[in-house]
View 1: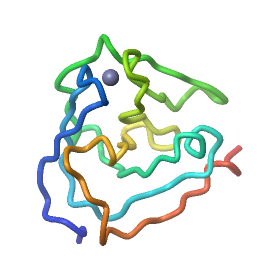
View 2 (view 1 turned 180 degrees about the horizontal axis):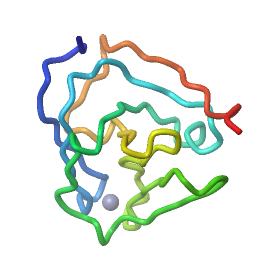
View 3 (view 1 turned 30 degrees about the vertical axis):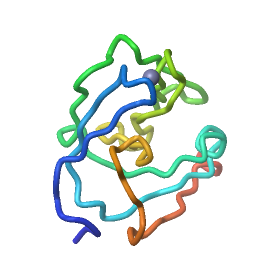
Length: 120
Ligand SMILES: [Zn+2]
């Protein structure tokens, strides 16, 4: 059971070039201590790729890869905002920056700290 009703939530980067929708009930939010998430100070929700739709902005997304080059960290090349990334250990899943969701309030959703730093 999630902390919210299962529903479609829309999100965007800051300039609006990148728009997407996710479907989730927010079972939890995660933080991560890996070198990139720590710098982004990201608070994320994990969704399967079938629950994710990119509506606009494929051309505006730039992809950044590092380390094992499996995880794909996307950001908007116009405004620099990180809206989502594709996960390394579970590449069928995306981590969504919940602060990019329209009018989203994380209040009341459990937050789990994940350990990225120690991953080989
Ligand atoms: Zn943008």
